[in-house]
Length: 213
Image 1: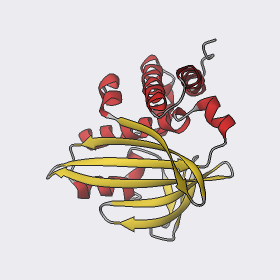
Image 2: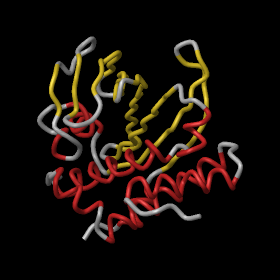
Image 3: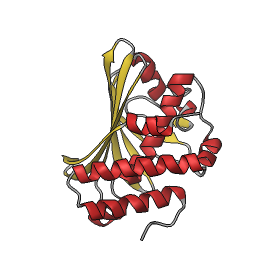
Image 4: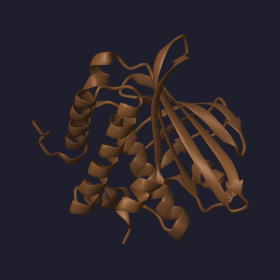
């Protein structure tokens, strides 16, 4: 059985801002160190045959300038690529455009750190409602899928993943992840009360439970 608490603890989270594409943007950063050579981790993150084994089926042209589409999720354009150290792409979903920047760093011959920044021009009202966990919890789930794939060589079934998310263990993972994003939000300067309320709403959105009053 996958150790939910261990996986949540293995991830590092940061919330900040930066000027990006001509405007002030929110930046959600998630990172984890994997027991994997950088070339293998690069393949897991960029090979169209391996991405579905831990994330979602993907189609398109996975080269600079090419368009991609994740099944039932975001699509976009590959903007930069520096094999095997990182890439950048637009992340387009629901009529909105945000951006991801992915970096891989070899910290030992068979140990690699994966860092992902999700950058978005988010209005204050929506940010106050859900905070960084709106995307952060989703990335935590993806990083867990990647950890499972790299450690076992197995694949993640999207339907089974959704069923697991609604299980007691899945709800526990989401709650723990959301709590960590609350901490990161406060560390990033958010008022505690507002960050707590946003985290509770995010947990409820992912689990289908009513948020705490």
